[in-house]
Image 1 (cartoon, helix red, strand yellow):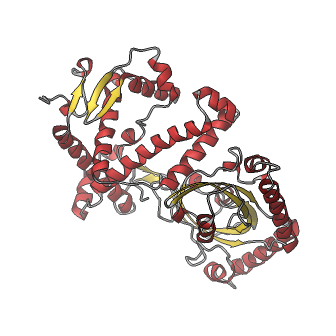
Image 2 (tube, helix red, strand yellow):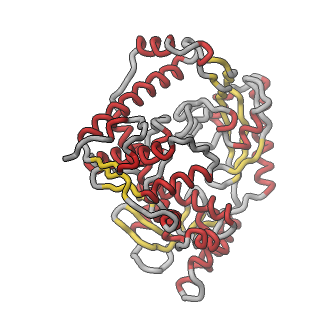
Image 3 (cartoon, one colour):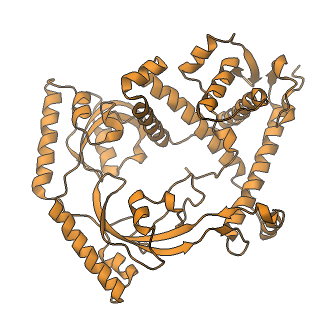
Length: 461
């Protein structure tokens, strides 16, 4: 999904669906409908839940929050209603990954799955579904907003006018940005180690297929996928296109029974899988992941090799770019001179080669922190995003020091800000138009509020 940078973040942050906390709040307040937007109702317990959620995050609520919170919910409903009409869909796989990461974070915070279930007074499956509904609503709103502003652009004259309208002391402060290149070597894994891993997985398969042990029990005990192991290896529903092609082919060819798959190799390691449910191009499954261990001598071999390559680059015998083409084994960067791309869609620099130091992978950030432009790091070992160990050297290609924005040096940043302002104005205008076209009923106690969008109160009769 494409990034929509900071479109009304206060709108996006509000979840429409309440989990069991709303039920607890409803016991303390007399629940009632306080707002109707089309066919959707906003309950007093919804508003109270949002207040409690924000307070738990340390947000200070002012006197107008009693009016602002239901208005924010109502604005989201306008976008969701339009999304239904326009048949907006979102990436279920991305939502599932987000929800799983969030649930694992909550489990880590409270101490165990059982404590989390006790806190919400629901099973983990119910908690996951509640979280998924909230996350999906937020993504649908984002997608709807993206569609509404997708054709908006800004001209050079609009960019210059926007920059001229900003007082000098209010010009944005641009943080230090880095461009980093890398050469990656992947240590050779011994065939005997791969055989050991496969034999383990065959033993697990036999235990499950014979009925001796459940798949989920073995996953909790032995799977090296920390994201799913605590949940018995359950991956959550994911789209076919989000899986590696061969992995997806085997899974979708499997019958819906409790039999265990053959051993499947992926970029992460080796898996066995048990199907839970298929829904068209979506699938939910359990898996056990084992990663072959890399021998220390294999890592040392690659460290020595990269130190030698670094020596050639430093002496001028070999350019860094030529070394990338000749030696790097990283598929994502080997054809782009080893240049890293910022894939954090929430970042201002998503899709570019720029990184604030804190957005770089931690191991790389530590190595480049004290480098000067053009310098190389030592060879070092890190665990990549797939959970496997690799050896690399990095080069600080460029560094843009922190400064107040200027139109010449930061034209793209100023352009994005001008574009964002224009998009926000378009969304504001859209909300005001939808207010006039949508059935809206506001309870008497909210009719005297000082709303951001005053058009909520009108005669529906």
